[in-house]
Image (cartoon, rainbow over all chains, first blue to last red; front, side, top):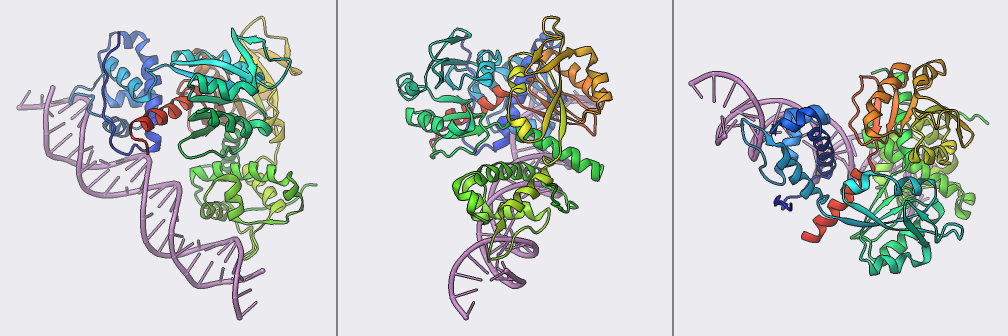
Length: 224
Length: 224
DNA sequence: TAGATTGTTAATCGATTAACAATC
DNA sequence: TAGATTGTTAATCGATTAACAATC
């Protein structure tokens, strides 16, 4: 069932729009599986606002960048909207990815179920430890880090995840880019340098905690 | 060696400022440990810009919200600046946290070394599985999820991490808030509802990947 | 027709970048 | 004094919110 969910994409899409649409997509997905969602045919921006926490005006605006998907006075057809969002976000396609680092975090990521759901398949896990190379986690073989570059190239992989200690993160990123990877999700707490045409998204867990902490301390001073 | 790194905090601090200062803090920390960093006494905003990738004007502006830490014509005294940043970000204090969910991700987080470095101590891990309760990961005992609320209350814990499947995430968040937790880092792919005065930061790994993917697909159309 | 809700324009708000006087 | 670099103001840019005509 390959449906056609076409959308335009001329304008300059604001940075945050994609993030919000991703959240809408996720919430819609969950909503469709509820009792209510099974029977409901359309959903309004106000209702989407309620389940996502995103301002309704903004939802309409974000969607409008890609086309007109709703009916005035009615709302958006739920299932169609979900299909469109998936198409916009590229999660209707399948994406092969590589994961570097078979430590605790790497293992957790390999067994993370959310990936399959959104069309991501881990094609190979890489590590530099003799003790790990050749073994398997979750059925996926751990390869020697030295073969990363050629593996990426021959399999034409465009997406990579870095889950190694900070000292080796930049080196891994370089290898990924050399092999042709364009999108990197980095969990190492370093600022990665990369050429134009490549995008790196760093998730630093400590930094995320620090942001929360700042809020705590700031609030204890001037409780707003 | 409890130094005094005072700073003012009257103004309304932009949202992104804290995130950027966190990155500066991390990069400065790494820089101090390099050969160059060991001897260097001061650092300019341009130099910080180079190691962080953040615009130099912005770095100066971000710092200016909290005080005057540099000398015109000279730059910022490296070690002092680092101390000030730690004080601003609250990472010079110790923070006790609880972690809920002893699955793969939970295990990875418990053994994550970055926490200690930034003053976070996991006081307890909680799970609902009979098989896990009573066992230990990394020396930290796994408690029954039912004791979460009272544990948080008696230990006056303000920070919690959610690493459970999406179906139980909201319930866990409610218990945390009921116990007095103010800051929650949530790894479950759901939008958590929470009362005023509490802050929740959700890290959804799939969504982060989707953002990268959008960039890939958008680029293949109009390669800008 | 009346009520609801979209798509879009206008108004507001906030964040980033540029520029420069102050000063080491 | 000349060069460097801060702290801060002004200019620009972008994102969010409000408002409303179009229309189901």
